[in-house]
Image (cartoon, rainbow, N blue to C red; front, side, top):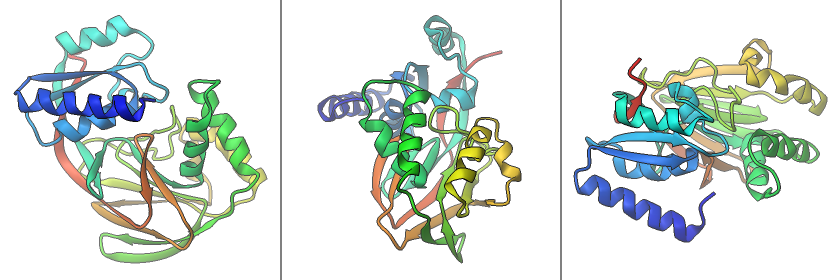
Length: 257
């Protein structure tokens, strides 16, 4: 994770590159670094290229980019082709993977505070810690104008299928269909959540009775309790928050094959 000072400098460099008319902005890092670069490139002709070296790398996963092979990923920057995909706008910020709220966002807060471990292990440890204290949250969702009141463990808004280093919460989400996938997980016991958790890595949780999915262009999330939203692994702030799809709003470099 970048420090506040490094993030400010990184953002300034990204905006300068776009303003200067560079054809490609290559980012070496994880989804958080991509998130910073996205604020500069969205809506511009500059193509975003990703060399994934972060904790989650879920955009790279969704785009089929090489992970764990820096040379192969760098080769895509040089020999790949541009692909136009959707992003989502939450408040004044854009994101490209998944917005998390509820249990998953509290896990994210815990995971970001863990320094001894990297990768999926951080999220697993944070999940186990949060399980001890978490209670379901009353939400009001406005889904393309339709209001829905629910009590939920979490509500996720996905442009890509996965977040958190491969948790396929929004299984079936596509990055270029002009829609957002809103996933609601209804209340369940802590024991049942532990049982379901491994299924998130395969997307097979979609058959569970607590799972529901809505496909929308716009959603407003409100919560009766203090609930923080994260997107691309970055803290956005507390609800309420309105999220709208920004269809075909950014070009990304993918493999030419």
